[in-house]
Length: 338
Image (cartoon, helix red, strand yellow):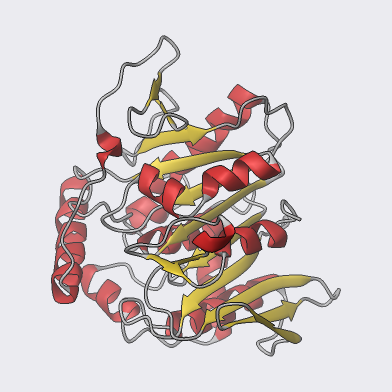
């Protein structure tokens, strides 16, 4: 099964990247390092980020990296960050500014890494049901990383959050759907709605031009990911650039429809706010008046994670776009920031 998944996923990524003229580059953070007796490795290129092994059955064959600020006490939150295609854990952790954020606000970062054995371009397999289903594949591997971190650090299991870019954004949607009992909130950056595709051809259509469904149809896909679940669900923010030609901005609209349906809000924003970098934030409230979904549209921005290096937020570069600090806004939405 993994062979067919790897073949189709690699083809999807290779064709998409070739069309964009993007080459597959590997960050230096894959350099070897010595493992200690507890199954952790200190990366030679990013000294603060450690590789953790032995975190579970790992059916998705992912690698786990983790950053814990010095002196972090028990009962602190955990944030899972999922890189995009052609990236790795260290590149996304560094580029999106998660080290600074963790140091300032006191939480642990878990950074799963896709491996080329699974996908030649390191894309998380968001469009393969074997990797997005509860109790299966890559989704279960990420859940096991969270469990290991909560156990190791006595972290607060009620304050676990997830965000990701592009394919990582698609996997974020899948994790929020499959594990609402694990995640308290999520941020989908230049990503896609959960269940948009279950095949290679379908994945291309979802990326661009996008797929139109009713809010109820989108919501049913989330509810089907954990049948019978009646507990609380994570609040969701959706980030997208209006000039994204890789994953069409239509996906942001469809994602908002999906999560407003799931979380008991309608599709009309209750408030809008103008933010720096040409960013418009739209708030969607449930029946109790709580904001449960937020959409951030960045005018003129292409495909990538919004950062603001001039404010100490990340580093500008490929797929890290100097507009607004999405990391800080995510933390505020999760009540982890100022």
